[in-house]
Image (cartoon, rainbow over all chains, first blue to last red; front, side, top):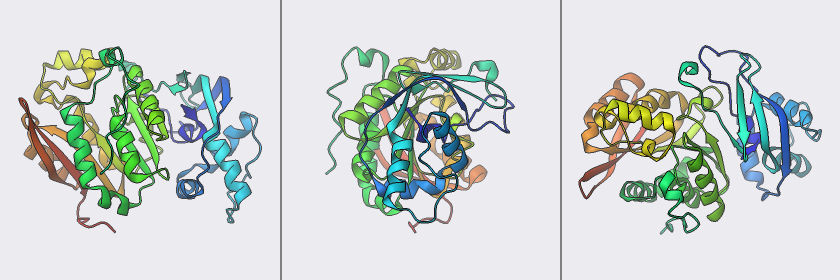
Length: 123
Length: 223
């Protein structure tokens, strides 16, 4: 299930594609919003592992402008709830992700990202 | 005692395409259960299972570590990805599933960030051709066919695991006696300074199975 959290940890891994290979760019996406259980502990623990700019830019691209451009120092409830929604409740069901560098296209089908490469594309 | 995950939603048709939990799976569950306190003390943020198949193992560790951990699963077989997701739902473990080969798409973003890595690889010695065909056809054969020494697929992951493991990271691997455990331990020690230890072993029919746990050298205790 491609949520923005999953998207935030996937990079292009095609042969010789080592720079500017993140974040992958969503195209032709079908979104579904599904409620998930709010867990502030999880969010606080995962926050340092996020690429913040990539997350905010991607959320904006998908129509969600609730996150601040800079990660706030104070993690209040409102911020954590917005982060929860962006990371875990927006599901990309169909569409694709394109590498900004080599333009390789990774399809998404039934919510599952297909990150497989053909034999000749493997580094 | 941690309950064995509920896989009653999976059918014989699913198991035509996806590896059904068997003795090797249960040995890994037992090893994780025996390490439950140690794993909880790690206070992990990210847990990755490579080749998750039915999703049984990640659903099980999800029962140990609870909801404040990111559970990632990869499988080369798209049917397995679907089963993993459904088994997560069935057992109330929120699993993020990626259809991919080993951990390749995570290497760059999650370098030195994964606290627990689990791998029950295709370990059965077969011809190299058989293993290659099984992997590229992305079906159930890929869940067991391991090529020469049964190590063809495992070796690929072994060479990327040190980059993925966090400083406190734990890596659990299912190994068959014929895979040559002492050679695996030596390889990981010399090349990657990962210290391996057999934590559990069992004979199951013709198979003599082991669970090996790797941690970074000098980290014999959890911090």
